[in-house]
Image 1 (cartoon, rainbow, N blue to C red):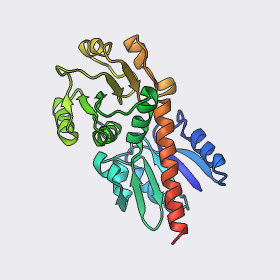
Image 2 (tube, helix red, strand yellow):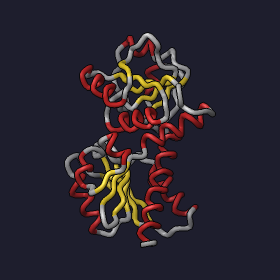
Image 3 (cartoon, helix red, strand yellow):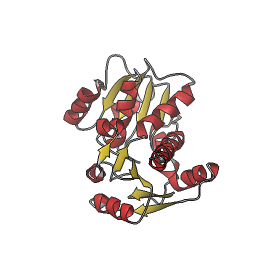
Image 4 (cartoon, rainbow, N blue to C red):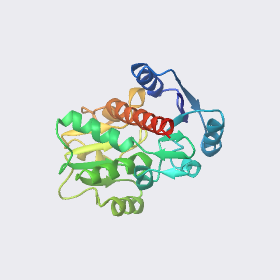
Length: 245
């Protein structure tokens, strides 16, 4: 299997280590490389990778939305989030999104129970946030959305049957999909002291939320590993399907 990660930046990514580990664990000969691709170059890069014989690729910021155009088929997860983070190159270019299942799996492992009926606040309304909201909606969680652009936040709430944040019944769990060192208003900083759990989708040196909040924040390492595993399983399933035809 010939695999890659595309986005900008990619130097910090733990995906190469994780995916190479999955290949070794499955006793599959293959490779996984990180390729820096600037905004606006995603579609051309997808077409080049396919022509060069890649099996698939992961897609990270800022390409998750623009690379939709390079896909012939989108899974329900990609359609609902309007973003892809995993692509398979077969007879068709198939795009999916595993960010949602990654976040849900990380939360359920941490909580040791389902997210069903939990009140979960999402900071942001971008590609990762939408994937998480779709997954939480499908698993019967009550969701809330915070964002600086009130109209975008309201539209996101409408799409995923969420509620605007703040609310009279605040979330007990918060997942931040904001970029590192995002500037947060003082009122929100105070409200983020209240949830039982705060998780940052960022990981490694890009996890800065704990420093701003001065409270415990769960890093995005477990979320990344879960979505990476889901991506690997997606590639394997499609490789097996092609081999069986």
